[in-house]
Amino acid sequence: ATEVRLASRPHGWPTAANFEIAQATLPDPAPGQVLVRNLVMTVDPYMRGRMNDTRSYVPPFAIGEALDGGAVGEIVSSTVDSLRPGDVVLHGLGWRSHALLDAKNATKVDPTVAPVNAYLGVLGMPGLTAYAGLLKTAEFQQGDAVFVSSAAGAVGQVVGQLARIRGASRVVGSAGSADKVAYLTDELGFDAAFNYKDGPVADQLAAAAPDGIDVYFDNVGGDHLEAALSRLNVHGRITSCGMISVYNNTEASAAPRNLALMIGKRITMRGMLVNDHASLKDTFIAEVAPLIASGELRYRETVVDGLAQAPEAFLAMLRGENTGKMLVSI
Ligand code: NDP
Image (cartoon, rainbow, N blue to C red; front, side, top):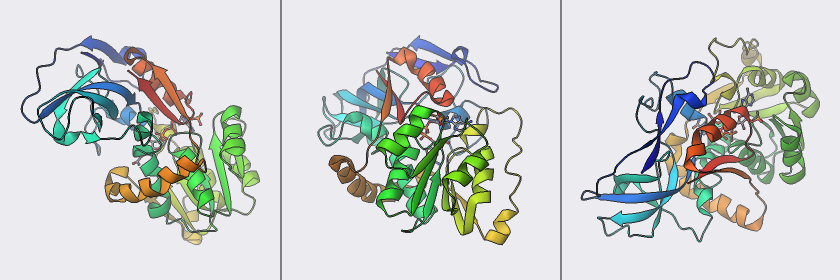
């Protein structure tokens, strides 16, 4: 089996030299185990944090060992009755061609209900993050004006559309290219969108949301968060989902400098982790799968071909070269 290992820990931006492609020999499945041939894997922003040697909500990757993360694959051999060869499963041992795992850690998925890639994106972890982060964490209400950053990404594209479908008064998104901005306004039905590289976020957000915002879904942190604090209305809410603008920083960032605004505006800012919202999964699928089927909720993916390209796909995602979920077909 081929696997991608962590060769060294990055300082600042990771590079290809931090990864190593290696061969491993897998034993036959022990009782209770299954062998899976992976079809597709995900590269996610949170994996950057796991490359550091710091304790967090997920343990760090170990140097010299295969990385891991979400993947969908086909059972090759099985020692349990519940999973048979040919079954397609979602599991946590990506970054390798074949995975040997306990059957209890594999969830069967139906490739006739949705394409297998969707279980890693719009109907998977990022989709649930959007759903829980908007409806639960930010307590979105019909009539709210919503701003979401990294809006053309895996999580952001779902946040903005859910807000629109659920009756937001205005949906504004930011992203890092003109093509992404056009995708948001022309295809996803955002009311306004801007390229944060075109000028100060605060000015562009003020122009895009002249009546202020009630909810900020934060995927980026830094100057985006600062701009949102200035633009939020009284009793505004912030979902702190991610802060990708600081993940590769070696020095702490200065923004937001205007936190004191939280007091007068009685702003609520609440961190969220998707892992806490597993109980919402069925409700989420029941609501979102039909929206996808009817075409009301659209999504894109960026798929890179080949396990050996996985490190480059991860780096490209950090640079913003993906629209929608970044995936690697194996
Ligand atoms: P995306 O698909 O949005 O991909 C990451 C995107 O981040 C890039 O495409 C890039 O797009 C953007 N980006 C990179 N650097 C910057 C920067 N300096 N400023 C602004 N944008 C930047 O990833 P996901 O949808 O998977 O994740 C989005 C966020 O949600 C991340 O912060 C992630 O950590 C977080 N997250 C949190 C979860 C939780 O449980 N709390 C679960 C899942 C995700 P662009 O071209 O626009 O720059």
